[in-house]
Length: 309
Image (cartoon, rainbow, N blue to C red):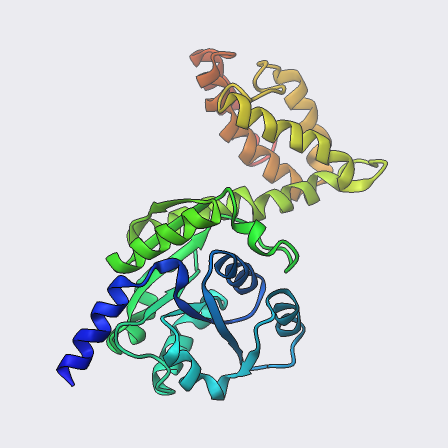
C-alpha cells in the first residue's frame, strides 16, 4: 500500500497543472468562467455539482461548457477521481460545502481543493485539509455579471492566490495560461483586499445609481458612461493623482458649496458626496493643484458640513 501511495505521489508531481482533471462545486457565473478557462488550457472538467440540478445556472453552465451537472448526492465517485476540486459557491456556503464533501467521502488525500472567495482565506477549507487535501484560495479580481464571457472574463486580470505551496504553484501556472497576472496574497490581507475590490466595483454601481437619480439625464445612467469611461482611461493612462479633475482639483470651493446646497434635498446622495469629497482633497494636494493650506481649509469646511450647514 505504501508503494502505491509513493507511485501516486510521484505521478502527481510529473503531471502538468494545465492538464489535471477537475470538478466544479457550484456551476454559477464564477464556476462557469473557471471551467471554460481551464478547458481552454487543456484541463479535463469531469463534472459540476449542484444541489438543485435543474436550475437556470446549471443549464447555462452545461450550455457553455458541455459538462454534465450532477446531483450533490452523486458527488463522491467523480469528485474523488478529480485532481482538483473548485468550490465556487457563495462565501457563506464554503465552510459547510467543504465539510459535506468530506462527509460524502468525496475528498481524498493529495487532492487540490480551492475556493474562489476574495474575503476568506484557505482556512475556510479546514475540513478538506483534515481529509488530506492541499487547500488554497484563488480569487479573480474581476466582476462576473453573467455566464456570457466565459474564459474571457479571466484574461488580462489580476488573480490573488493564497494557501498551500503546491496550490500557489499550480494556480500561477493556470493564471498565466489564462493570460492573467497572478500574485500571492497573505491570508491576513484578504479582507482588506476584498473591501478594496468591493469599493472599486460594487460601490461604483451604487455611485452611478445615486448620480443618475439627481438630474433628468436623456438616457438615464447610460448618459454618464462616456464620462466614466473617460475617467477610467485617464487613470490607466496618467495614473493617480494626475487623472483627477473637477472642482476640488481646481480649488473651486464655491462650486462645491453649490453642490452641497442642492444636495440638501437628497440626504443620502449628500452623505456620499461629502465622504468622497473628503477623500478627493488629499489626491488634489498630491497632484499639486491645491496647496497644503487650501487642502486643510477644504477638509475643515467639508467636515463642518457633515452635521449640517
